[in-house]
Image 1 (spheres, rainbow, N blue to C red):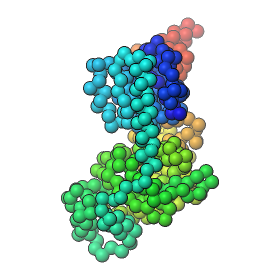
Image 2: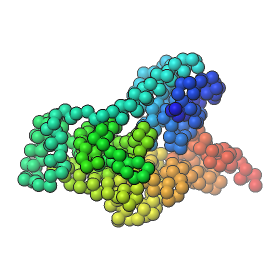
Image 3: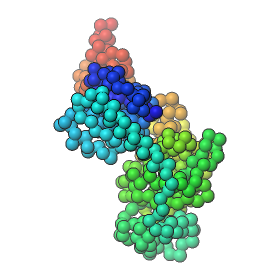
Length: 419
């Protein structure tokens, strides 16, 4: 049985769909409903559903923006769009965000049920593909090249000449299209383990890792000694954008589909192939931390940051950035983690462990505290206060304030003036 969250600002339609569709027969369980994109995002983070059914046009956050942000926190989750005819081509722009279905409004209960059967079949196929045996490498020589590149410490040449020779061999084996291709590289080491900590990684696990990584960047890898060793390659911008999504997707997929825990060690980003042996050593060093801390995602950059500053120190830096940067509407977990030089995965977990709150909850609380201060202590207009607190949309600001304080900004100010 797959779980689903339904998001639509038309309450009557949303309630009718929940009431009239035979969700159990279709293979789904409704675990939450939302009236806007912000609520939907919060439910996705909290409930971790398999599917989000959402209207394209939503208050405060469009369906496409919602899909983009969902991929940051639940990259394994699939999304089905409900859209009007005029929105259909617009909705198709989000195909890269795990959009599994498009449905045109109005949609009847029977039509939705029929589509749900198709969606369930697609998700079944994705789950089955994840557990399939690994495919053979394009060439046996590619595996040999990878193993030498990552495992062999001996380097006959140094500098630019060695880099050029490696690129030429990488192009010959199919790892690169040509020797002039400019990529950055990261090594990732992965194992799957059961609830007792026993290693359940097999040669077939390489296929599962490849299926996830290859959705975002170029991937090549091999299985050795109970681990899957992966070389990820992309442009610098692509690597910085997708690396944390890859490991989140992989960890979530292993848990949801295989019922196992993932141990993932990740190196720093290297500017060339000649740094890949060092990257393998870094990934293995990060990977080794699971024996002390349990299964999870371990970026070498996070480990080194903790050495320089304790976990509480990193959390304090994040809180300082929230406190000083809350006016910026683009402030996000990703932007803060970049400034601190740790992964967003690690920072998110650290903040939640240290404060019991998510990054978004802390940021919203800071903005609302400032908003209340300005409401009660100044004569600024609501629109001006919204902008001062990092909100471009006054209506969205008022929605957030009412959700936080229980009353609208205008009522809050009026009650204060009447005292």
